[in-house]
Length: 51
Image (cartoon, rainbow, N blue to C red; front, side, top):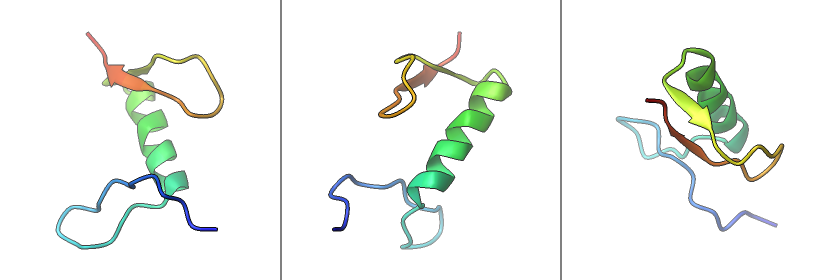
């Protein structure tokens, strides 16, 4: 069953980013201190820009 949640688009293409790739990208932003994870959950995470 395909997901109905919109995926981020890869810049310069018409291809959506895979959910795993989007999750890893956000995790990397957290590691670099650019973003922070707000929901404290393992699924359906919410991210925000770090101060």
